[in-house]
Image (cartoon, rainbow, N blue to C red; front, side, top):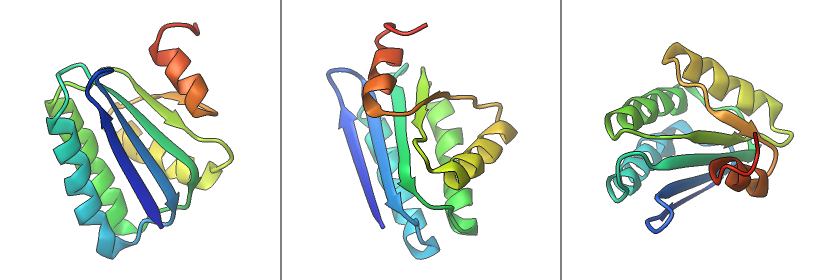
Length: 123
């Protein structure tokens, strides 16, 4: 499993990419790192999560997702886009958890499409 967390301070965007399965033993540390990255951005930041290579998470991963959604709201997240590709099971898991918090991100099939959505180039 690999997680890439990349804040872009100039664009005020946070990019998160998950490849493989986020194991429960790693989930808390990854959640902490994502929250630290949010702290570097201004209110209204955009969040792009790339799940194209992600696998479903265990219970601790789901708890960290809930925590990240709650903290992102506190930090006044703006638009969110979830890149799903063919990762249907992981995308469904994220969607179910997000729905509990009335957090409905845009869906995209590539990073380029996500960027165009956030730049206002797509309807």
